[in-house]
Image (cartoon, helix red, strand yellow):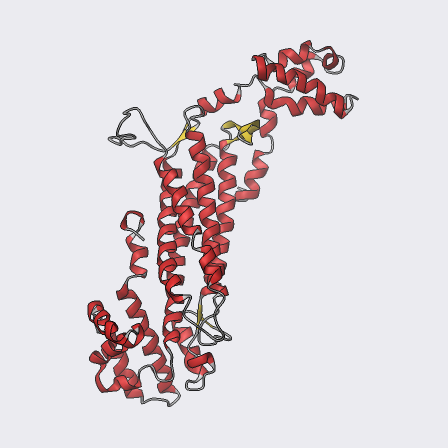
Length: 435
């Protein structure tokens, strides 16, 4: 995580101050539950909450203690005792460090996901607005990067909207999967703590109870979470790459907004580069880089080890902060994207009507010509257009094999581009629902 690619709201979730505050809340809620079932005095539980909630945790002091103890949770508990006093002996009773660390991580991932969902909503809102704006803006579709058949720029954006909608659903599911609490003590058997304590902490923090924690929450949950972030990042890159291709000088059907005073190159003053979408491509790679380590974290020794810990201390903040930034940047790119319908039209007609080749092929087969011969007739005329710049429609009309089956009027009708757009309303209804 670096400030250049960070938003303060997400960074705050992963700050030491936030982490220690969550640790305290876990301990205080656990103490309250212990008091209710008679494990510790109710007055002690009240004092823990009252004094701890007013405390301002000194990160530097906790770090100083940890340099001696070599244990972060013990360092925190030692510092907390300075605020609470004698009743601090009732803090953390029957609990183990993973109860605090894993439950806190769940809370942080939940909060992070809420911000990611807000970012997804911003992307979806921008895509929907621009999709309807360009619902009927005709453009050439490409397969393998080569002209294929027409579509509309709105349909392109509708596809992205549908993809990000699926991504949002996956994020919601990932949030639910990661939102579990473990307050089960050493080895997860509840030998020194009552399961009712776990249930209380889970409820107060908006978490579910982890059925079997074995002292740690199973990391298959986290693997699924980070894999989901990786999929969303790939969707970001897919759309960013589309915009990058469309901005190429030879295409120039759309481009990133170029603000007044912006510079594209230190050497070439004419340059307007797709820097934002190139940046998004790189950020997506960084988010995906966390997926394999998260999968490898699933494999722990016996009931627990901490081989996962160092990984999660990095990928937890880094991936959520990076993806959060990327989503908001992408929303801005879509919102301000400059679209050039005239260039789309120019590119559409560049190949002299070749995008209608399939219509002619089908018409010939329906007129009684074998598919093999139909393909030969259409392709030989298409290649004249491809290689020599001939007009496809003119060549078809002059071909005796084609003319024997299709009249000039028939062929003219096949070069109406509106034909290709007749189901755009159907696509939009599927994606956005009926008006």
